[in-house]
Length: 167
Image (cartoon, rainbow, N blue to C red; front, side, top):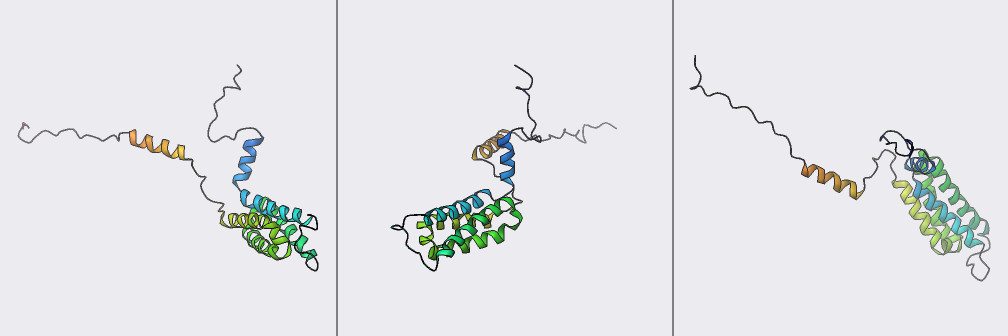
């Protein structure tokens, strides 16, 4: 066994590899909100390509039926790659999701509308300065260690009584 395989890692140093790098990138942005908003727009766009037997709305709203889900996908991607403007993108995303109800086969047969609305709400509620959540196991382990530790109480030395003192 080489020394590299058993090398202990210190908590402050980042681990090498693609997965830890992706986790660090994902931790600094509203990842799930942006992903759901993007998937909602993509699902609505795919239902626009459905056969004519399934399509419910077509006609004057044809352009809006393609424009709104395209903008939903764009808002979701911009949320992922520019999280500083997440509030604007989330508000625009929820309006586009609700607008797809009228323009795009009832919002992609409700699925795209729900994905877009949930993604927008997750994006709106994300806070960049939050401490990372600790898992239940970590919290229980920390509580157990606190409970088993006995606090060290300093016991004062008994002072000699005034009667025992000799002058």
